[in-house]
Length: 370
Image 1: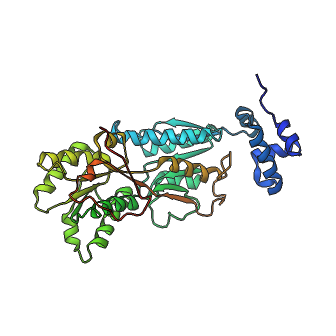
Image 2 (image 1 turned 45 degrees about the vertical axis):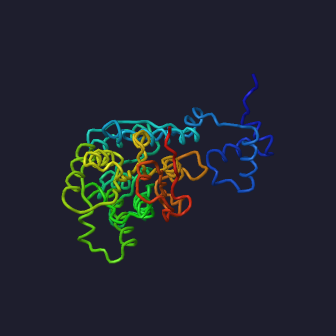
Image 3 (image 1 turned 180 degrees about the vertical axis):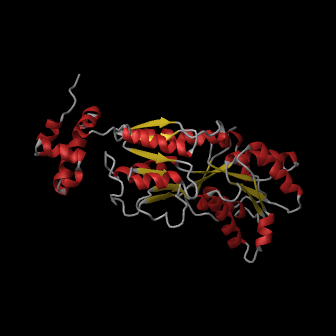
């Protein structure tokens, strides 16, 4: 069996000392760019991988990122969490990092878990999910100067550009705008929206994308008319079905429907078919396996890009260790990922099949399987 390359092999090929190789791997910022590039080239050529366990002992770090396993219902909503955790774990492993999951009863218990894991040196950083307005977890971590990145914007006034509050999010406004433009491009005009109750940062952002696109497409449309075209529901298939049944029965004529998530879109699909409108187009958001199974057009969040953005903010684009909180290593301090519309047969049911006015690359098309 061929012997694995060592630090000495890298040092010999790069023409530097063993300590210089160690510095490039562990603290690259202190090494001159020319020397660093030479060492990195030798690492790539030899296929050298640092011994993670030895490095943890030497640096007194855990090479571990902690994230709470949200108590989301399994099924449609849980599928998004599963995909994100898989993407984050895979991207972290490429940097010799691990992801540890923990549970908490509520937000305050989650903060106590942060404290315990920090005090025990069990993790180097945290990733937050399900952010909300005035999120106490973000305030606590920033105050304690613990490295973290949130998947979801801080949402609080003045927090979005705060260098102490790093975040990655999917541009929900752009996603629902893509879905709305897609239906308008097929000759439809009265596009409704099924969203969550006001007060959810993510939900409000997605509703805004639909509203702004409708105003662009229908200049002069009144706020009252837009209000008639939309309704809200909780994140549940059955509740969404009832909400759409009521919307269809209330009088406003709809040509199509953009939904805040695949869960509510599935309920909407049930409602329109029960109403005898099997060709009524419905658009979802999240691109879950359920959307693919039932032929639902949906907005894909590009969770691989989200995971990469989170680790880039924590470690730098090529780093392999967590940077100190507030280091200011990233001038932007956040990433806003542009989603992609995946078009399936549900939106092909619109009466006009023609160019939809979206930009190239805004959406992909999947053929219906025979």
